[in-house]
Length: 263
Image (cartoon, rainbow, N blue to C red):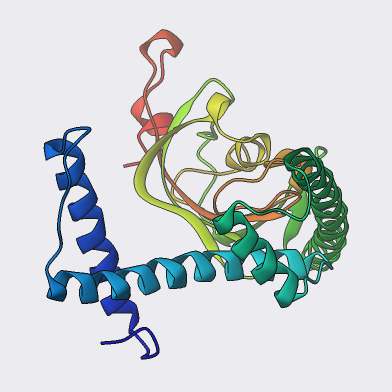
């Protein structure tokens, strides 16, 4: 294997793993004055390892360049390579202070562009959510609460007077998704405290009879608002399909089986 040959991703990872093990072994056994000689085979192998390290660093840099390009920043590859070589050789065309200042300045540019892009995305997501809510609210059987939560009873049952209140805990089957259809949460026979869920879901649960299934559409302001989670972007309208299985009995409220258990 020579540096001019192409290595597969698996080969590169294996070489880097070998190199990491060798460095750890040398660090644990070497003294300050100790010298380690390499066999001819090891010398050849080390050339491949060096190439693998270069590929790894280059691939990481490429990922950074893709993200910068998405923000409108294009870089001349020759300048990047020149800077890489100068950094390796400790022979800089700029002072270290100038290099640091440029990187700090560029970081400010990047953060500013990211904020601008996030603001545009938020406006687009908000507009799409408003259209979705408007269309849903005009469907047959959809009711909108005073707080702005829209719900549609998918599987009605007789009203037994057992609707939950904010102080209740309920057992539900539920699925939550975004307006693009991506599911972000689900649960079967899950216990939820109304006082601890997002406001829009608490509002929707209070409209339900035990045994019913309801689709609840929640405006972003009553969901996660301008906060992003791992699966839910900021300013997202949320859709929940919920089946209310039961209301957990609360001895302090004198709850009886006909209004609480839903059996």
